Amino acid sequence: MAAVYPATGALPTRHSPPSFLRPSSLSRSASITQHRAPLSPRLALSPPPAANRRSFVVRAAWTRRSRGELDKSPNRKSWKQRTDMYMRPFLLNVFFSKRFVHAKVMHRGTSKVIAVATTNAKDLRTTLPSLIDDNACRTIGRLIAERSMDADVFAMAYEPKKNERIEGKLGIVIDTIKEYGIIFA
Image (cartoon, rainbow, N blue to C red; front, side, top):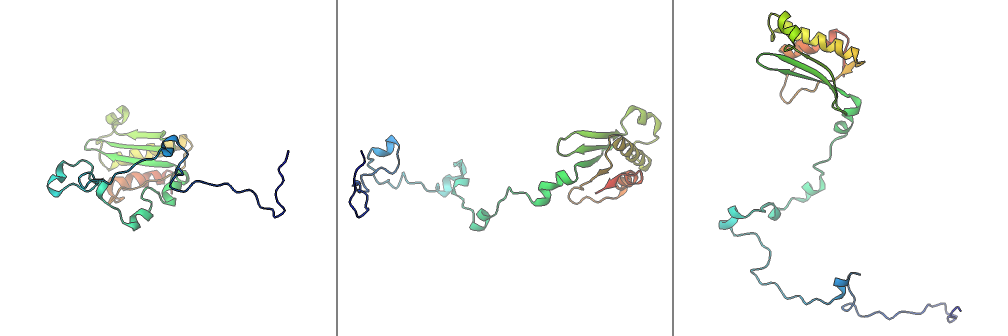
């Protein structure tokens, strides 16, 4: 049976308890009244005294970042950093040691090695007079270009490290790869 309400259209009101008796949460522990005693000055959280700071482990908890730093997202990468792996997926990696020259082409997304060439290979060690001179760098560039084309890779990228110039032996390797038909993007 449906209840009949007055013609005014008002719904019956519920009488709610005063706010100090209402729990702030629906959990059982929130419904139990809690008596909170004021903290003594010794128990209050404050940074440790200056003399005892060296032994204090969690020092970062007391530092506060500025609002400008909080607004910035320090872990957010730029658009180029996020899309570069897909736009230029193959990366050339060249390493020069005191005795050998090593080069490889890798796929950035899968970290799969596409082509490898080194002067430490048995066939190159016996045929090349020097394993670190300009002629050895040209040979490594030619091998990388041929092996990349065999793997159907016709474009690659080289990202120089900070304060690294593309000159000398590195320039010779890259120029030789370009001469053999690989496009550098």
